[in-house]
Length: 209
Ligand SMILES: [Cu+2]
Image (cartoon, rainbow, N blue to C red):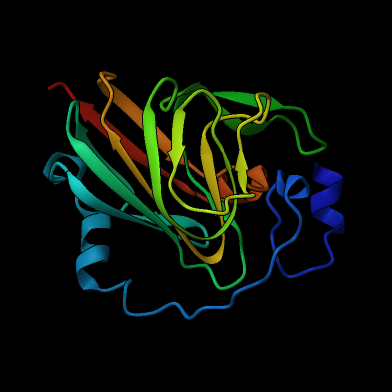
């Protein structure tokens, strides 16, 4: 993987699962008004002051960060997670988990995914999708209402549940917060040593019901 990254001649960071679904088109979008004061404000709030998110929850990916980068969800709440990629030229994903699985590279061990996948056993409905590179379902129970969905990867062995979005892409995931209270993280491991190490992660607190 490290070789592939270094030799990459294009100004696009390909997902490490890109080869499974073809190249797709490159949409270039502006970084715009959606990174407004209120959203940035959410990102810089201290954890203690972070409100509990429920209903429609927006998460924006940029280079290389999430807005917001702190969230609180409550067990049993219904959430529609609308994950957007506002990068003009890079792919980003969003895994949620605890602990890390690493792989060796010439740069030393690289964190590739979470050891425990938050989405294991969770029922997820995909009700909107645009410019999705791939979504690895892992052990989530996924109902996809969007057709066609050649980007959906249901085979085992593709790592954590994670939507990977092309520039300008978005996906909506509807689910009920599972009974997994505690501290979790969300992160992007695309070109792991670049995105994750650049700080592309956030903290998620799951509150008991
Ligand atoms: Cu990323």
